[in-house]
Length: 235
Image 1: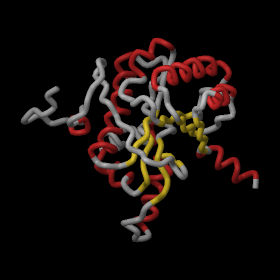
Image 2 (image 1 turned 45 degrees about the horizontal axis):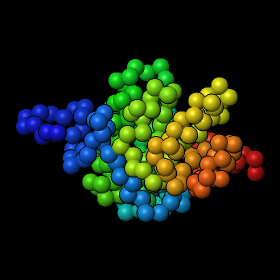
Image 3 (image 1 turned 180 degrees about the vertical axis):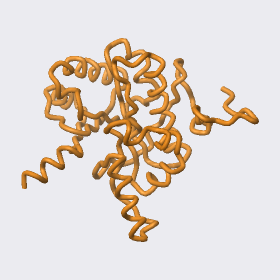
Image 4 (image 1 turned 30 degrees about the vertical axis):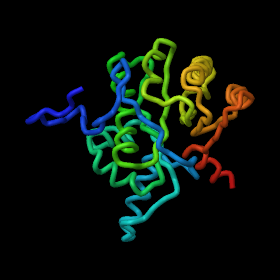
């Protein structure tokens, strides 16, 4: 794939993010898992950005955090013309202070048209490949699926027999009407990717995760930003 064209201003593609990458049959870039250790804790990008700004105000330009950064939050908090895709250099300046990232969770809502869902899966892998393989930081792949017609592309670009991450904040599987779809997709994830570890951002207190543990899969749950807020109020 030729990703260098003289005179072309790369506004949307961000071709530099996939330099040297391998691609699936669906043109989704392969994003290797580069994390050697599991996260000590997980912050959202919005939380990480707040911490970054606080440390800079305090004059701590070289601060480091043991946290991984995830993107299990509203897209407006990380994806806009001032977000991580269009201002990737600024995103890098923030993220390099943390131990690693879980790749972005660009939305793939069921009512999105197919090209938009493919675009967002592409961006998940491309950003992760760039930050992990090209920039040399720790990366764990986020997995996002929908109804069964998404299975032909939504697992593309993620290595088998590795660690993956999913979010349970928001609709799935907390809402009963979404739980069957979530559990079906989770089973398909395991069938296709054979992960040895699944990181769950949010509650893992569901039967489907307990069943996976009986299969020898390690489930690591991390509290969401919302749950931490409610835990603080309960004290």
